[in-house]
Length: 360
Image (cartoon, one colour):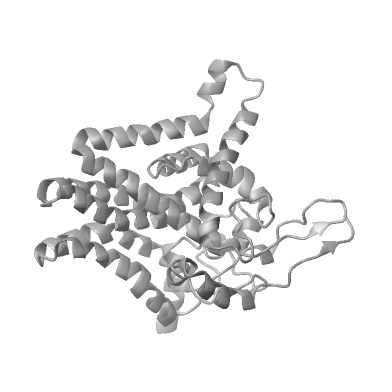
């Protein structure tokens, strides 16, 4: 019986994601109750990047299937609810900062860090899941969530560029072997933005000026970010605006850390006809640690996502022929900040670099 309970939990543990939105409000309450002030902002960071990697090791890996009877509640409503709860909780913390903090601007600077990291884990990851969905309303919500971290360009670039050119020199979100994160980050953000605007211009060819504006997703998502920024400034002044902008910076940086990890050093084979070989399992790094996969909606089963981008997260498979990371993302995101250590850990695990392939 106990084995059945454990198996069921491993198959259906995605509800654990609902714990993430409460981390920052909980930390604020603890800080106020125990009078530890700004030090309380460290609590979510210690849990996410200290406790979670240890818990990953304790709960171990899981390569099996997930609950295939998952309903829309799990696949759609659960992620959206988690993202909305995080937004509400973040707004509550901003209100507390303005009302109670002795120095609201300093508090805004400090609390933007955990808020932004959870935005990267929740808001961006959930939007990533939604922008791949077939239903338009889900893709619209995904774009709106990206606007809350000022990265609406990701909605266009990720689907229409990254998934096409991944593991090639054409993709700014694929880190080259030997490239440090510090070189990768500006290239990834600038490339994402440039490609999104270029793709949108191509999509608008043949449309009149009014239709081009009405259908310009990048423009409207950028304007939506401005609306969010103006709204927080109007309600909470400079502290509100500061939290919004800084949490966006931290969220996007965490996203690009994960992008760096997901495809570092992996290259698709150039075929004799000059085209790149189809995307395969060995073009994305994978991690099968169960707990972090529950919290990240199976994002670490990344190879199957790139081979079958339309798959819901509950259906993603663990592919044995994919290159495997030694730990989950939570343990590795800060290792990338130490390039010599990162190379020492990852380079021995890199697949053999491909040469030119004959055939079509």
